[in-house]
Amino acid sequence: MSEMNKQWLLKSRPVGEPTPENFELAETPVPEPGEGEFLMKTIYMSLDPYMRGRMDAGKSYSARAELGDVMLGSGVAVVTKSNNSGFKEGDYVMGMTKWQAYSVSDGTGIMKLDPSLAPISTAVGVLGMPSLTAYFGLLDIGQPKEGETVVVAAASGAVGSVVGQIAKIKGCRAVGIAGSKEKCDYVEQELGFDICLNYKDADFADKLKEACPDGIDIYYENVGGMVFETVLPLLNDFARIPLCGRIANYNMTGHPEGPDMLPAFMGQMLVKRMTLRGFIISDHYHKLPEFLREMGGWVSSGQVKYREDIVKGIENAPEAFIGLLKGANFGKLLVQVSEDPTRK
Ligand code: NDP
Image (tube, rainbow, N blue to C red; front, side, top):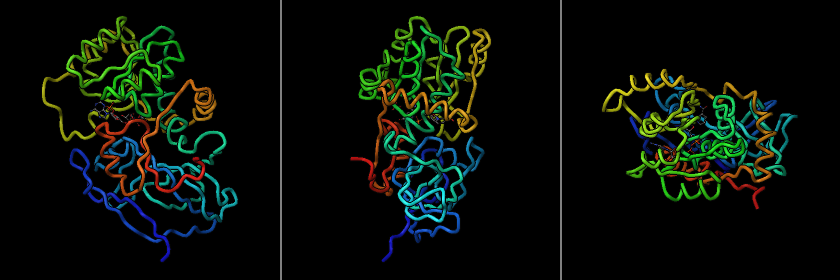
């Protein structure tokens, strides 16, 4: 029997946290590339928090998926058949391969990878979208200056880990926030942040104040929720807040209970003359060449380190994604769909 394609479809929309029942695994024939097209065999599928927004019916920052669609996402693949002169069999590529084992493309949005320069998996991690997000958000919006204090949560993750390491390169104090002692130890000891605090500790607010004796100049916002509320009183005059993500809210079904924080937030923003700027990295892909030059140098010199959390088997994608929204991942989350011939 010939090999079949495996595809994860959006079966139903989640209410709150996604569950395995929201996804359906379909087996379909491996597609044939038409004229000018080529077939890609997925090696690594990237799982990213933005995918949660696509599962909802409402408008998110990324286009929503329709029921029955293959779940969207980028990945790293190898070309296994080609009718396109720009791509040949054996080429390694990165692009919108979706949650599936095989896909066909005409080359639009597909980037060729050179495995001799960096592990191919990094094209969706430290040399890809999440790291570009860290780079743009911190440098362009945050405008860090030597001696300033930069705070970032989800600090062991794909974006946060890079934010803190760039902050150190720029001579700042880097304060990480993460969800376990193990993650915090890694952030301090391996990534070289000055300190990392567990936001689940009962005395988190006191510890954060102690860790930022000169206040906070840049709060790189990845999570929202109680972490943001704890950070808010510590922000300095003219603080900058690159608003990158708010993962603590992604599974929310309504407004949180408790006091309305909006007036306090507006008051702080005004009195401290702060800047908060939301951004979506797809508006800033023109930065990619500059980013790849600089980040490529930092990664190969060891100034920027990274960690990948590789889940084996496409069957495990929904469970891994559900875990990502609750902090089960430790590093850039990838699903390995097929063998990586470049990895020894
Ligand atoms: P990560 O690799 O950091 O994984 C997500 C992490 O978020 C989890 O491991 C967990 O870490 C943390 N987390 C989950 N729930 C909560 C919570 N309730 N409170 C605090 N932390 C929580 O993901 P990424 O690095 O890929 O993404 C980080 C953020 O950046 C996300 O908000 C994402 O949406 C955003 N993003 C935005 C982009 C843009 O264009 N604006 C582009 C790319 C990413 P822990 O155990 O430490 O809590």
